[in-house]
Length: 114
Length: 116
Image 1 (cartoon, rainbow over the protein chains, first blue to last red):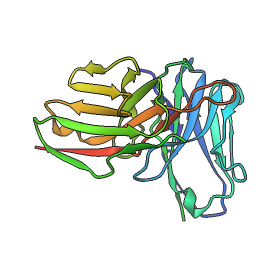
Image 2 (cartoon, chains in turn purple, yellow):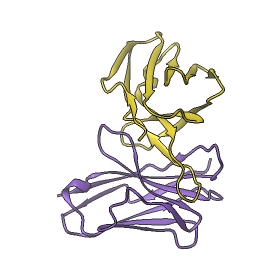
Image 3 (cartoon, chains in turn yellow, red):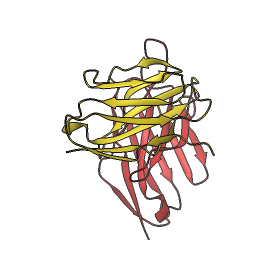
Image 4 (cartoon, each protein chain N blue to C red):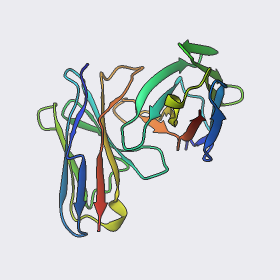
């Protein structure tokens, strides 16, 4: 069964450093999502792509976060500089992009900022 | 804005019993609602979707109800097993973006522990 791939699985960094996360969605999935999940809370949408275009980044802290999906396939989420409050699980999900859709999540990247 | 409320306290039940989890929302009624399962350190996994015109949906030991009058969905696991222990998240269709695309709002999840 096809899966969403993410790397790295774990990342420890010091504040003010730059970090990057990679996501490879399920083949053929037009929509890609990046979520942040703080322990004990539900996933919060950071950015949503339809093919290579950003369709929602209203919750993305744009002063330090950036995301791209250049060829409409895999995607990178970057944080620069990282802050202590960025420690969380970063989840990538993909879907076909239908009106009623199911999201398939990757295993996530656990970020710890020291 | 839409708010979703799930029991923040963990639910402990005995093996073999039926677990019932609640998802309440406060604003507009979504066209559909989804339930996901999340194990520690893993991404959520889709379980069931129910549309606004459906009162009930079943899948094996799982059952979901959707009451748009009460603005509530109930998620039931019958004959629960220790392997059902996980966090269960409900997700609602959120407001459409400016490009007309759909996004989802997740609840905080309820942690279920099934005791052997």
